[in-house]
Amino acid sequence: MNITMQREKLYSLDYLHETFNGEVEEVLDMIDMYIGLVPSSVEKMREALSDGNTKEVKRLAHKLKTTFMLFDSKEALELARALDEQPGTLEQMVDEVLRLDEIVSLTVKDLEIEKKRMQKNG
Image (cartoon, rainbow, N blue to C red):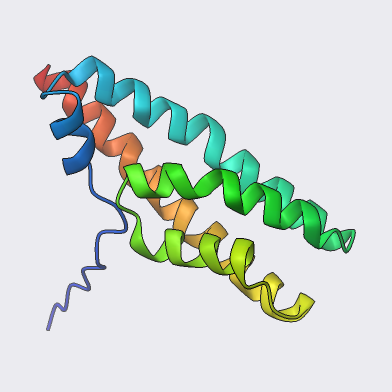
């Protein structure tokens, strides 16, 4: 018996397509921005946590919220808000950043596939 597990999509490009009136190049630029910015910011969060610098984690989380809103990445946005607005214990923050890292990694993989598809279909 072959059971296929389909995970829930962690983002949506609908808002970007609507904002840019379907201009593929503009949406591709935003995808490139996400891929170039978000994983490195989450890595900086991990580094800041290992140094005990919760202020830096809050600052980085705050900066990422807009990107997560643009990509309708609900769970990532929820985690960024929690890290920015209601930071818990260091242990809770570590758990939240690790989950955020997981979400971002999966999103980047999906966006890279979506980007190729969009480039192919122009």
